[in-house]
Length: 304
Image (cartoon, rainbow, N blue to C red; front, side):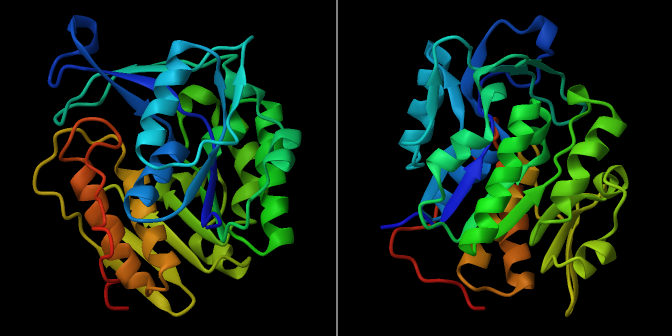
């Protein structure tokens, strides 16, 4: 069967400190995978979709670990390139519900920084209906930014829908650098998933995105509520989380839940409900992907 969704982006070998212990004092770590697009890929695969993840990894043990996790989640990694000259990125962080998470990245010059337009052209979309990428990928390197632009060009030429999340991470660049990277991308997206503050960074608004051609804009608010806005109206939901163990990964979970229902033809309101529910499950577990929900094999679609 052909691919439904293609995601493009970096995945890193993740080491999470024991829960509740500050990174500087941690002695034991839990290994997993982290990356905006790989998180969304896993979320969609668990919900029964055929997802292809495009990226580059080092020819190292961390690259093997990333591939092992994603393959075990039924994500198609057949087009992933291995680089014997560059390493797989590493992310270390702690896990706290009551204070800001401390994060350390080792990604400068990683294999993912070697993404290029030529790689995307060679990999292709394999008939996908939807592509998803975040601003993080575009900020990795000039070549990676060209790779994202090529993905958008392929999507347009092949009739695929473009989903985009700015996913601003201040450690990757200044506000001006982020604005320069986001402006030509967010305006081309059909589905936008954004924090309310990220709209300011991109110097745009929900109304401007809808006027420019987006069919839906999902906004993540600081009070942890989420809202979807379309030409037909707006719907807002409060968080469904009753227990927060680890807040990291909630945004990607919301995106995968929403996109799953979009792929099934659900209304924006129903899709938002699935996204908010997925986010609530993820924050109840440690790591970005462990709490992502599974869709029972052969389960019925929800009412639309």
